[in-house]
Length: 288
Image (cartoon, rainbow, N blue to C red; front, side, top):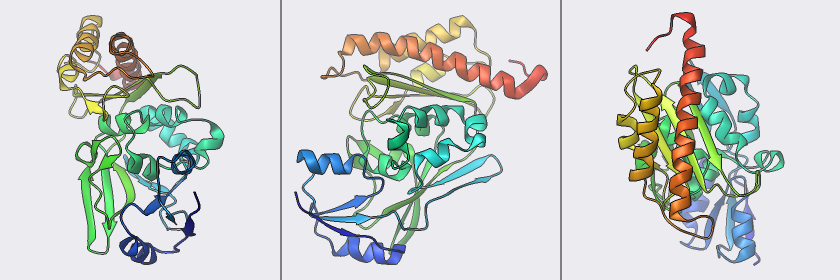
């Protein structure tokens, strides 16, 4: 399908184009790794694309233990930051799970969030890390918790005149992301499990992707984990709680029963990995 392309150089120009566009006929182009495929396959019928690549949001910055990620920064740049690997292993693992190296040179966090795929590898770890989405419009700026931002499959809380400017992760936490898919790369996860730990000490977050119309937090699994270094009994309780309470679906990628078994195994792995990372960070004085 033919389309026109605009490449605004500043947010003000992008807002003018966005407001002037007709609903359903205008689409935002971040990395383009999903949008261009959707256009080619007829899943998106936009006739005017607004590229965000030249907006001044192509960077990330650490402020102490907090990390702010610009919405148009390629995932590969973020992946290559050694501090991301060391301080936020779950985020780093989730980025590595996205497609291939070539794809990550183009794909962006803002594009991933805007598409809100149920099988996103990035959204579960952002849920576990309690990330905040920073939105900007001609009316000003507002901040939305990631859990409220993702509404359903391909549906977010972004208003028609808003752009995703950045994503803020309030603090670096011990974390992990593990996933299962049919093929190692360039495929969609059947299940993805993200786990993060503290603060306060002993507070766990468990999130799943690929199991329902939107990635979800699992408070029942979180409540089963009561210590910073959980026992095998705690780990098993959390894994079984996740398998019982996650809103599983059956689709062409996996059955509900298969996903339930997968989640049990992946939650065990993610919790153990997170506890090990926390122990390494705490050093010999770290305890329960």
